[in-house]
Each structure stands twice: as C-alpha cells, then as structure tokens.
Amino acid sequence: MPDELDIELFRPGTFTAAGGRNLDFSADTLAQIAAGYDPAAYDAPVVVGHPAGDAPAYGWVKGLRIEGGRLKATLHKIDPAFAELVKDGKYRKVSASFYMPDHPNNPKPGALSLRHVGFLGAQPPAVKGLKPVEFAEGDRVDRVAVVEADGFADFAEGGATMAELLAQVRALSNQVNELRARNADFAETERAAKSRENRAFVATLVKEGRFWPGFADGMAAFLDSLDGPGHVIEFAEHGETVTRSGGEFMRDFLRRQPVTIHFGELAAPDAAAVGEHATEDELAERIAGFVESERAAGRTVSYSDALRAVTLSRNA
Image (cartoon, rainbow, N blue to C red; front, side, top):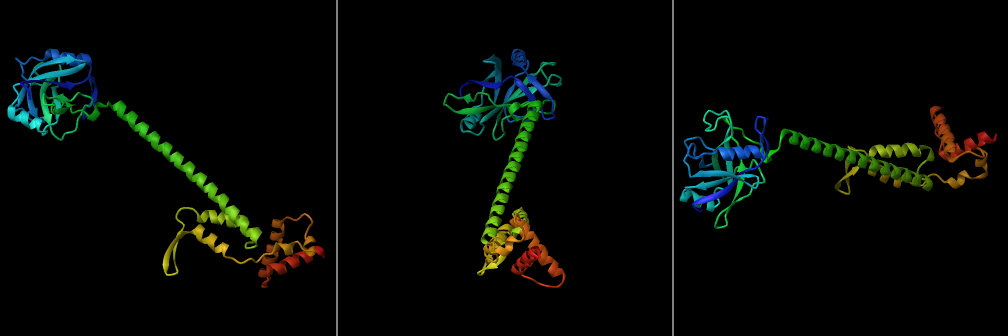
C-alpha cells in the first residue's frame, strides 16, 4: 500500500437510519463535511470495523475533498502490517462513520463530522454504488458508508428511504395479487375445459348405449365434482397400490359398462306412438318415471319392459 491513498467515502442521497429516521446527505452536506474537516483539530483514524474510541489506529485521514460529486479522503501514515492484511483480502470493504451534529464529542458542533474510516471484513455494505479502492498492486476494496448508533445513526443497506421501501412493498404486493388473479383465471379455464370433456364423455357413453340419456347431465356434473381438489383414492390393483382421482376412477368404471340400451329398438313402429315430436330426453324421463312408479309399488321392471309399457299406454 502506498504512503498515501485516495479513497471514495460517501455519495449524496437520503438514507434511512435503524430507528426509521431519514437523513439527507446532499451534495452541499458532503461539501460542508469536507470543508469542515481539520486534522489539526481532530485527526480521524483508520480503524478496523466501527470500534470504541480506545481501539488502535492503523492510519489517519489527512484530508477530505469533493470530487465528481463524491466525498473522498486521503489516508496516510498507514501501518505496514495492516496494509499487508488489506492486500491479502482480510478487509475488503471500507466504511465512513460520522458524528451527528449534537454529539458531545463532535469536533464541529452543529454539523456532521467524520469520526473514523473503518475497514470491514464480512460486514455487508450499507450504501452501494461507491467506487472500489484501487491499490498500486491492483488490489480492490469495496466502499461502504455507515453512520453508527450511540449518538450516530445506523443506515439501512442500499440507502433506501422509507417511502422507497413502502413503494417496493406495494409493488411486490401488486405482483402477488396479479399472480393470484392469473392463477384463479387459469384454474377456472382448466375447470371449464374439464367440464366440457366430461359432457363429451357422457354423450359418447349415451351414444354407445352404455348410459341412460335421462341421467347424462347429472353424471357430467357428478364427474365435475370428482375432478375437484381432494378427491383422490388409493386401491390395490394387480398386487400394486394405485392412486387415482375420483373422476378418473368413475370414467374408467363407466367405460367398462356393457351396452344395455339399443336405440334402434326405440325407433320401432310401436315407439312412434309415444309422440311424434317426443325428444330422446322426454322419452327417457317417461320411462324412468314408469320404472320408479313400479318400484314404489314393489315391482321390478326392466327398461325394455318400461319402454313397451309407455308405448302401449300412449297408443291406447
């Protein structure tokens, strides 16, 4: 490390202290700090971290100046052993600590004053965007700016103001709500598509004669409910445990039903007497009603017998 080293300490901005208070470091404020620094009155030390006042100094701040809108410091009388530790990467960050205007030890009462320059190890930066230190050998140390507690102020990482943090929270909340809305829309689209599939499936069963048309709408709605969340069943099949949704199981069950309804018979001459303009559903309702009335009377009839009975009753 050279006998003297110029480093970048601070940049203008409004920073939030740990207690929630915002402190403004304007360009004018930084200029006042630079102009007010007098090493003859108070020689700010170069230290490790942000220690108490009795910690050893490994160098001193010779002077402060404004360059390119940033507060810069010239360090001198740097301890050679400490310089080697920095070169070896033991301390890769630098932080500036300032006295608050009303601190009793402030050498410039009523104004912010530089307290010390701390070299840090693993501590994360509190103010980003400062230029790294460039050593003659090409080593680099990242810049950090912190104003401490105990009569100082500890600034939040990144220098965000409370208003900026609240804006970020609102933006994240809006993103979450948007994702929830998209998820709900997707779920509704998926549910509607599945419902159309169920109705087409039942219509195919009816066409094949595996299911009675009068119950088609009810079965489609029933399949919709079985496809909902939470309807999962486990059972043994061929010596293995099978996990399926209720809808999948019911559709497989219905597919395996034998053909029991032959609609060709419904178009026989006798069936025409049921009504010239009777729809398939109306015919199914009449037959189902006849079956139920017979069952209530203690008699069991097949759908074929019910068809004949309905046909004869209309033809009489």
